[in-house]
Amino acid sequence: MGERTIWESAGRRRFLLTRWPWRATAYVLSTPVVALLSLVALPFALVGGPAVARPVALLERRRLRLVDAARAGRPASWWDVGYLCAVAFLALPSLVLALALTLVLALISGPFFVAPDRALALGFGEARTVSEALPYALAGLALFPLLLYLFALVAGVHATIARALLYPSGSGLRTELVRVSQSRERLVTAFDAERRRIERDLHDGAQQRVVSLILRLGVAKLELPPDSPGTESVADAHSQAKQLLVELREFIHGIHPQALSDLGLPAALRELADRSPIPVTVHCVVPQRPPGTVEGAAYFVVAEALSNAAKHSGATTIQVAASLRRNVLTVEVTDDGHGGADASHGSGLTGLADRCAALGGTLSLSSPSGGPTTVRAEFPC
Image (cartoon, rainbow, N blue to C red; front, side, top):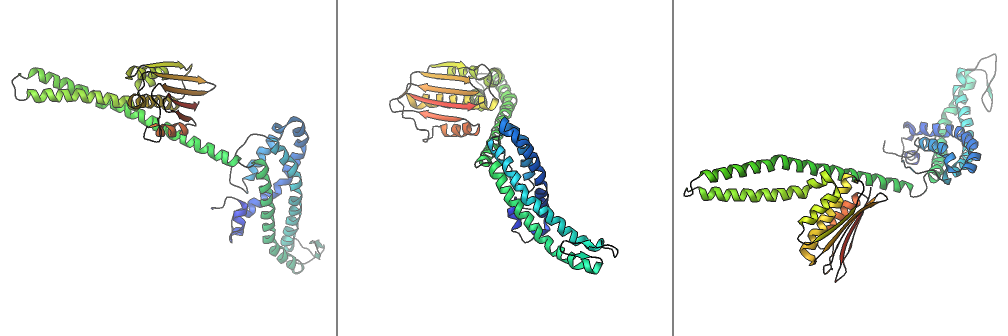
């Protein structure tokens, strides 16, 4: 079924043929029991706070699924205590409907229990024979579908009040945002794992084959006479193979640097600084390793910022800082260039900003005309 709430189902023509009427009936008939528990817990909740009301609130959130399949979650609050007060009043129509259901079932089952020697009370009259009880049974059968709709109505009103108190406005949206955030983090983790797999395959497979090819070509170049027609071609192939190895190593390093995997972020940032054409000073205070996805994202933010500075800034010095405080990893790259950088003009920071956001982090750029330019990223760990 596509319906998620009792309200959606009650508007369908086939409502009485679905399971929703019985779920609504179970929800309404179980309300007095919860009301009794609420009355017992209410004085303690008023004294001890929302945490005392939480067990009943958790029970109600589970019971609410009978008539409202939309789920959410939130910590204990005074809204839970408010629900304990409300459910006592909500139990009154439930008791009325319970009595009505008992009467209707008595009318329907009357013909099976009548006897000539005793009168059977059927609400508005008495019956001693099946023929006398039959009209009451037919009336009960006619009233039963109407009674199911009344159960649905009461269950719907009760569920609306319960959702308003147990899930105040915005909690469902917050839960959905958390789920989306977790889903995006899983995607980033899977993507990072795939990057590492590709890096390992290239390092252990393609790179080793290129190294072997370079050795073979080197041996062939030495064995060929200097005046041989193929000597120049072999020498050229040897030179191109060595250049391919350099480019392949740079490509592998761009996928996922080995220093980052083996030694962590501080060592990887210092390696980046050594490779930069502009002098870079690195200051790291990272007492423990953050999660791999966060560490990788922080590394590539710094790598992109250093690359942009080398290409566009005209800087003479760059400062790189990384710190982990209160479970937040912060990396910052500042250069003394001419400024005026714009992330929307193909700097590569836009993609990094999306990656930061997928991990719940933020990326900011400050680059006034005349400098300095600062790229700052923060990641919750």
